[in-house]
Image 1 (spheres, rainbow, N blue to C red):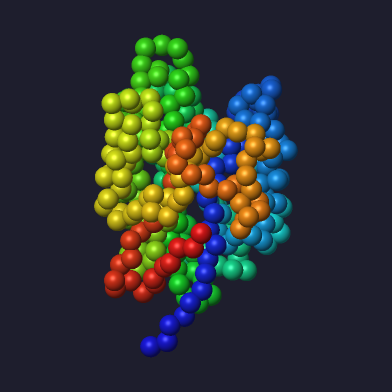
Image 2 (cartoon, rainbow, N blue to C red; image 1 turned 30 degrees about the horizontal axis):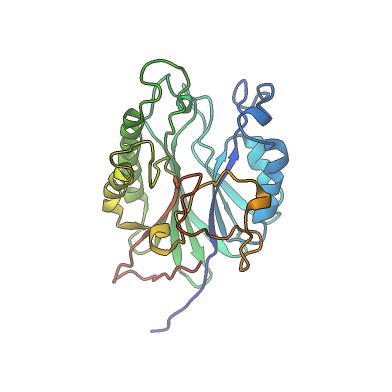
Length: 297
């Protein structure tokens, strides 16, 4: 039996292109290009340029509006993209999920999406955004297939300063209800013949310093609830240092990675200013699967 090999370059990026609008497809709220996230209009095309030609599959989060999605995609002539769940009443904003694929490298053979029914309430700014998951299956020229699911769970947001608005236990319970839906959705769509990548902003800190008596408790709960998918936290197995989503440091004090000049050097074990809430979960090798995978950096 002949064995074919190939590689697929995958990236997950929480782009932070948050620019609320008066209504879906309508004008942006005044000053939101700087109040909610910095320089959204200027950064959206830069995201597309950074991706173009460098990756085969790009799973993006927080590309909330169609105009930002188009601004990202137009920078890459050959690219195809699939948006995640769109806004539907009473949610005013879409999921922000977007998977961009280079059709010269891989072929999209299946897609699906899911809107979470679980969520927060009117005390949470996230209540106005659609939360869900986006499934994409791609096929490499060698015949190997890869299943990729991106998601974005509830953050909370402390929208109104009323009792319970900053209740971390309440927010975590809502997120775990979304995880139950996520596991069911992935279990339905995935093929055990294919490697699975589950990526996204889970809004669960790997080391939550707000919970002094058990900082890793929420993370362990998340990992346990994902066990039916037989996935592992790829950063925990192969990453260097705590891997914060953001260090909140300025670019002039960040050390470039010698191997990847456009990336930041992984830090050691010193305490970061940020925390890790974005994840890549990867399926364990299944001995009878037709495709075996090795992860490179």
